[in-house]
Image (spheres, rainbow, N blue to C red):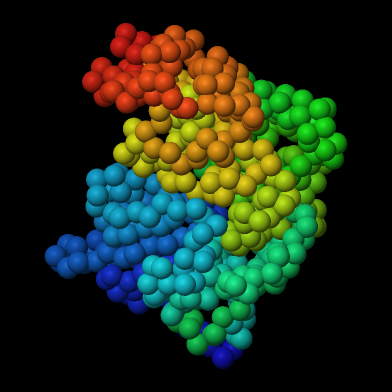
Amino acid sequence: MSMTSLPKLTAQEAARFIPNGATVAFSGFTPAGAAKVVPCAIAVRARELHDLDQPYRIRVLTGASTGYCLDEALSSAHAISWRTPYQSSRTLRDQINSGEVEFVDMHLSHLPQAVMFGFFGKIDYAVVEATDFSGDGRIYLSTSIGATPTFLHCAEKIIIELNRFHSVRLSEMADIRILPPPPHRSPIPIHDALTKIGWPYMAVDPKKIVGVVENEEPDDVAPFDPPDTVSGKIAERVVRFLLQERRAGRIPQEFLPLQAGVGNVANAVMANLGENPEVPNFTMYTEVFQDSLVDLMENGKLVAASATSLTVTEGQLRRMYDNMDFFVPRIVLRPQELANNPELVRRLGVIGMNTAIEADIYGHVNSTHVGGTHLMNGIGGSGDFTRNSYLSVFMCPSIAKGGKISTIVPMVTHVDHNEHSVQIIVTEQGLADLRGLGPMERAHKIIANCAHPAYREYLYRYLEEARPGHIRHDLSKCFELHRNLQQCGSMLPGVEKL
C-alpha cells in the first residue's frame, strides 16, 4: 500500500465509521496532539442521531485531558458514556458528577498497560493526530506521544488526522517504545532526560488504517494567568527550600531533575527558579513542557527536558517551530508509560512538585474531589511522581473563595496521596517539611506553617480535643469545616473575606 492509496476522508466521512457503543482511543495529552476535527464531527453526528431519537454514545480513552474539540464537543453532544483516565472539561465534569458519564480515574503511567492487557475491552478505533505517515505503516505523531503508541498497537481500526500546522521535525524529538509484558521487562536504559531508547515513529499494520483526514488546526492550549501574589509567595518558598537543601548537601550541586504539574502555581515556581541566580542550570523529567519552559530553555537555565507533550500556546509553539535547530536536541517526547515511569522517577531522583485541592493536618492530600464527592479533573500523573520522587512537594493557597474555604483541614474528604508519600506542603503562609516527623509533630508543623491565621486556632483546638491515638481524630468533628461550608457558605461561620 502506498501513501497515496490510503483513502482521503472528510471528518464527517470518518465519523460515520464509528458506531454507537464503540470504544475509541483518541490521541492527545492535554490539548497537545489531540485529535480535533474527527471528534467534532462525531459530536455533530451524535446530535443528528439524538434528534431522530436514535442512541449514540461512545467510550472514550485519551492519554490525559484534551482540548475543546474533543472532550467538550463530545460531552456537549451527550456523546460520551464512559471516560478514562483524566479530563478537564467543564461540561464533562458536570456529567461525571451527575452520573451521566462513568469515569475511571487512574494513574497515567498505568493506562498503557491496562489497555494492552484488555482491562477496558477491545479498542475499536484509534483516532490519532500525525505530522506524517508512510505507506508501510509508520506514523509520526505531533505535539504529544501520551498513550497513542499503545492505542495504535491495540486498535482494530485507525483513522489518521494529518495535521499540516505542526512541524514534521517533531519526530526528531520523539522516542517511542512500547514496553514488553511482564515478566520479560528489563531495566529501562534511560539515564538522563535526553537518553533515547526507541523510534521516532510508531509502526502499525497499514491494513488497519481506514483513512486520512487532513487539517491545519493548531492545538487549543489556553494561556495561564500571570502569577498572582499568592502564587509568587508559594514559588519563593519552594525555591528557597530547594536552595537550602542544596546548601545542606541533600540536593547535589548539579541539582536534580524537576517535575512540575500544570497550572499557575507550577508556572510561578518555574519562573522563580529561572530568575534566581543561585539556582544552577537544571533539567526536567516531567509530563508536560509548558510555556514558561520555552523562555527558560532559550535563556540557558533549562538545559534539557523529557516530557510526553508540548503543552504550549500557539505563539510559543510557533517560536519553537521557527527555531527547531535549537529545541530539537534539548527535548525528548516519550510515551507516558516512560515519562511517568516509577522506576525512572525513583532512579533519577526527580523532585516532584504538584498542586492540591486540600491537605489535612497529618499530610494526606486530596487532589481530585471537592468535598470528597465531586471530581475536578483526576489524579493524572501526580501519584506517579509523588510516590516515587526524591522529594515530593505539594503546593496550594492556604484559603480559597475569599477565606470561606481553608485548604488545610482536620481530615481530607478524599485521599489521593497519603502521609507516607507526601514530604513537603507549601502555602503562601509557609512550608512544612514533614520528613522524619511523627503524626503529632506533622500536625503542629502544618498548622503553624501552612494554615491561614483565621483557621489556626480551630485546627489547634481540634487537635487538642481529638481522641488520643497514634493519629488523633474526633470522628464526630473531623468534617465539621466541610459541613459548615455546606450549611453556612463558609467553613468557619462568620468568615466572609480575609
